[in-house]
Image (cartoon, rainbow, N blue to C red; front, side, top):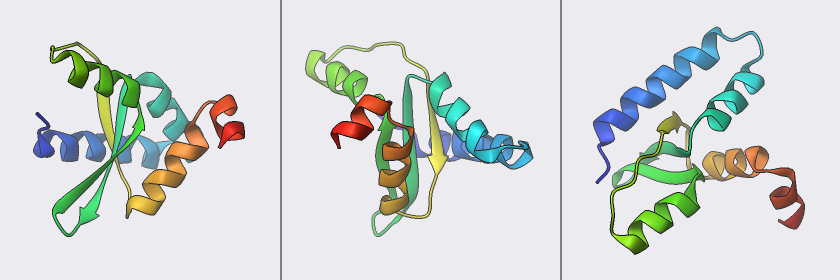
Length: 100
């Protein structure tokens, strides 16, 4: 079960980290590389939209097995779903970007 309050707090921490970094793109890539699962959060008609940036396979495996697994996670706030999809594409491994 996702805790939306926790995701907002994580996204705020990421925002601060990226804001104080000299190279913001490098900082954002470092955040994504450091976690097993990275979710983009954005405003939506339902309140908060979610898009998996990294770790979809992990979440799928947990859902299929109906078990609890330990994994690191964070969230990144983006303005909308389109930005989340672009961020996912830009930070995917090179092989995945070429295949897309």
